[in-house]
Length: 481
Image (cartoon, rainbow, N blue to C red; front, side):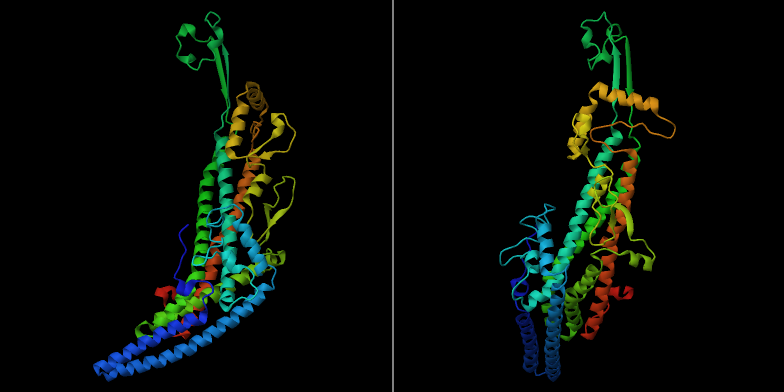
């Protein structure tokens, strides 16, 4: 992990917002005072007059910051109370979600003692779980930080789900690729009885290099690749893996940006107040103040409305009203006989491991083939491959199904080779189609909703920046808002 220690003056939790603003205004006053003294020293009435004008601007900035702090305190208090009374975004619910992610054994960025969520000692990045925990007497800064911190936890949950699904895709991809290349081979050999020792002729790996008079009198080799058609799925999974990898990168970027916003907004506010003291930096100062407010007010508010409205799923009535079907055919249970389907929810993605297990294409051992009657047991991909290869080394086990499949095959059908770890052709196709369906949901959560949230936030920031006398162009970004 990159050390997350930031300047203690403006970023340490517990640093009061009013002292922060007071220090910035004091720096503004010092700048204006130096400006005026320079005019006195130079006997320049124009410089002294401009210094007086900037002093009036300083008074206006102080009044404006009083209004902004009051608005932030009022908004944060109401928002904290409103979120605290909800089932989904209360401190208890968000803290439980945060702890589940941290203890879930996922990627190091989100789990373990060095993750973004874990507790840190004073003077370092404190950990997101500490920021969303319920406090007996939360300060104004705690209440201001909570909506953005809760949003960060929700984004971390989506990131964790995306990483898990990407890993499940790799497992399915590896298993399908292995089966597509699995080629059982059976050889029948009749040794020459005149050659001694007879038993070594047909088992000698170098038998083909023996002189003609010592080679077997008859050899026959039969091989087949029953699942060679899986190669089509395997090749298409390359594109699917790229899309899922891009979705994971997008979610990781959103998570890191949200964490940066959580701890940079006081810096932006501080810098904005200081830069607003001088006329040639006043526009950028107003823009920085607006950005800091947008980070803790606009973005969390939009995200909270989306999460509270859709985290329970999209009901059928909404789909009917907007012309789409929220009921999908994605399995919601790993049991093949189950008819439960996934309910559309942009904050709870389909579990791809559950989907693949539903179609019995997750690496698992069919214990009936190895003399047991238990249900199939999930195993690591390497163990599944070892079971299959070891099973096929027994001639009778590999020869009989291959011969039967070759004799009984009918036009339009494909012979099937039963294996301890297997995935049927139809099941593999159905699993692939379900994976494609899931990407439509992943794409909404990873790309479309964040883009809409960004545009809404930028709209609010530019509007507020204009009211504060700040820049409203953002290097041409205003043209697309």
